[in-house]
Image 1 (cartoon, rainbow, N blue to C red):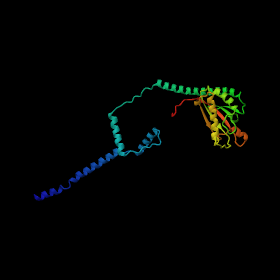
Image 2 (cartoon, rainbow, N blue to C red; image 1 turned 180 degrees about the vertical axis):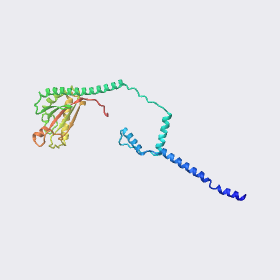
Image 3 (cartoon, rainbow, N blue to C red; image 1 turned 90 degrees about the horizontal axis):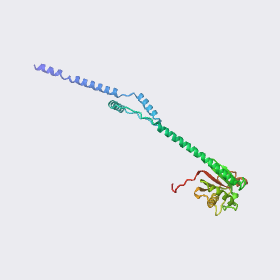
Image 4 (cartoon, rainbow, N blue to C red; image 1 turned 60 degrees about the vertical axis):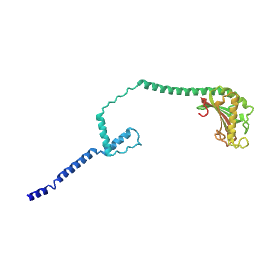
Length: 278
């Protein structure tokens, strides 16, 4: 009896290996299934990423590939969301009346701007004609010229008509020319720029250290006289360019004489008031 019991105990020592082998097999199968579920075709995913980037038309932006586990989890959650929450998308009706009114408004704005530009050019043409009638009675064309620029009417007066050599004091005959111009300019709403120019011969004295000061002083003198004859001061500005904008060569006497000039510009846009600091 004792020997039979000992043989039975020896045969039962290896039975746990069967259960352990079954457990390992099931665990391996579980990991195989999990890996097969979570695996992603990387090439298809890259094609999808490129398509999304192209659809948003932003070639500089790139998409970082998601981790396999993250992509699987996102796809699983999206599938559950689509199954549990049905939805429909309704396209809102297009308001044709609103679109039509917007288009009409854009056309009206463009049409208004074109009309304003046309009116501005026609106004400058009228101003040029009126000033030409005045200038024809004052001096010959060599001394005073009228130019019709794109956005302005320019009256160019040789400095010898208005000033003495190296001086900003008006000559006696200058009052006749400038007062006649002021009688026309004072009735206009347009801005007026008075610009002074010199030749390249240097000047240096106690009053004018350089041609900058001489040209600016001459322009300011004309502006001051216009103001005295009734032209609104807020519409005027004086500018001095010195010798830096010649219209002829400074190598000859005739060229330097042409460069010494005063330009009176009647600008196309009416003056707009502006408070200081704006």
